[in-house]
Image 1 (cartoon, rainbow, N blue to C red):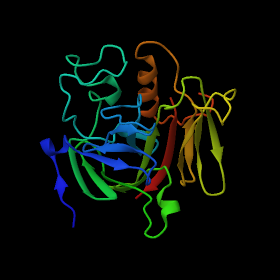
Image 2: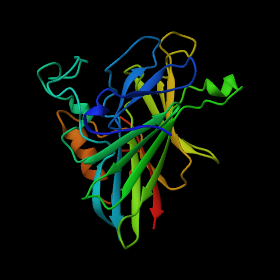
Image 3: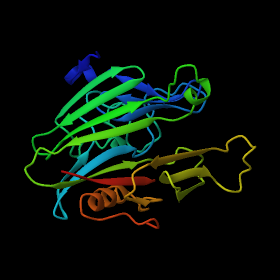
Image 4: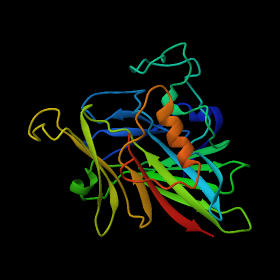
Length: 264
């Protein structure tokens, strides 16, 4: 039986996700991904660009509501540690990468019993209740599989309306590797996803080489290998505008993967 936390008690939560000896990322109390300690060093309060989960509900092909899968911002109201992003640090308010000023869920409840975390999201204006489960690949007596450098997420959506709705969950992930990177869509019999690597000219045996991926076992997906590239806020504005419509991503259009399920 795990304890649940709400409101101001969410501010100190950073639930580590990652295999044994592989580093970890933190799942904060309100559902945001932070504390990216995957490069062999401490890295508290770090963020990875516009890395966020989001959800939308469609009724007959028309979007009824779309918002971030996270609760209220509960800390860093005056700003925090400077991470190199323009106009953010102490005195500048929450980081723009948190997307704190955009639509999100009013009610957020975090529960956890390591290595499993659970967050429940509710909002009177969103036609459904959402439960996110995040966990580590820990398997008793199997240290090899328990050391997989990965974080796993599952979602459960309860339709609170009296009609059929289509729900879509999106994950946007900035490529965390060297700035000269390559993102490519891939698929197999069991999953589809986007691989993120360093530049091809960098030998895989050299320091600095790396790879990462996001994937899903959902059969109906759309994706973009790259965000719209522009200056100022045009990139995030374009992403949110398209996601808030019935738009489906095209591969040629940093990185997002959108699984879609019909829920009655």
